[in-house]
Amino acid sequence: MKYLLPFILIFASLNSFEKVVIWGHKLHSHTHSYVHNGFYIAFTHLGYPTYWFDDADDLSGFDFSRTLFLTEGQVDHNIPLREDCVYLLHNCTDPKYRSLPKNNVLFFQVFTDSIFSVPNLVRLDTCIYYDLAGRCLYMPWATDLLPEQIEAIKQELASDKAQASVCWVGTIGEGMFGNLEELRPFMRACMENGIAFSHKCGLSLDEHRQFIQESWMAPAIVGTWQKEQGYIPCRLFKNISYGKMGVTNSKHAYELFEKKIVYNPNTYQLFYDAKKRLDAFSLEEQYALMDLVKTKHTFIQRIETLLAFLKLVQSSPY
Image (cartoon, rainbow, N blue to C red; front, side):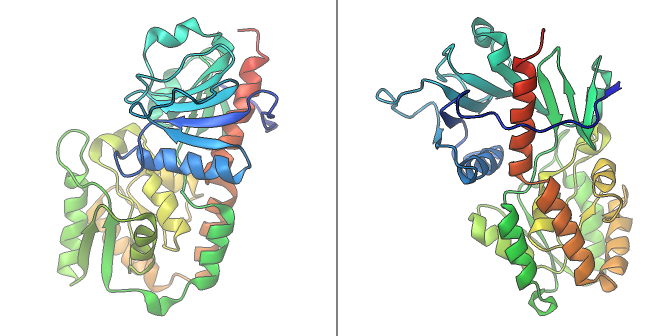
């Protein structure tokens, strides 16, 4: 493995592309739609003309010249293919992209331990790496909040808002990729302590944030398969940015947050560790965690890294 320090982040300028198109899951239609929403909010905030389309949209009159596309492999069937455009591809294996200039096609994947088998891997930061020959960037997701929104939430935090419940937003499921097996011991510990485990789906973004903000505790627990793969849950970035202490069974997430959050791979014991820590957890400690998300783990930073890597790919000899 190689290391490149420092890595200078340089924005791709609008002379490389004129607009951004998120081509994929419309909001609330799929779990990945929340990733696309994070990118949409951040690209728009950065001043790029940004659009969000899917395969069902009638776009016969839209000018796609000099577009930066961002898409995902389950929803890219009708994406326009143009040599004057740039493509940021996640989980896309369709060979159709081979017809495009190769340095206009960049891949990005979620960071897991599997990337360490990639030859000539270069480290940019904790849990962020790239493979120049493969034109692939590996990174975790991020919170959907902008830095100024996180700062605003810091000013609103008050301990008397908390309800006596553990709050979970999102999927709970069984099977190889499910999380129920890891959640059950945590839920049992909640029951033993008279703490309600409140689970909700289908909330609006504002409802989601309020639900988490008013919770006593909001863990980010990954399923067994994800834990073994070293996956870092985006739920953790969100929950911390919404104003909650970090609680997880993900070792890499613990390391990413400089061991300042609560971690235990045994989720039954994780509850008790978190309960003990929460009793003495200060607002200053919460602010420090939120600042870490604000400065390193929003989609603003993820876009900066992607665009800097794009510049590197376009200037490389591969």
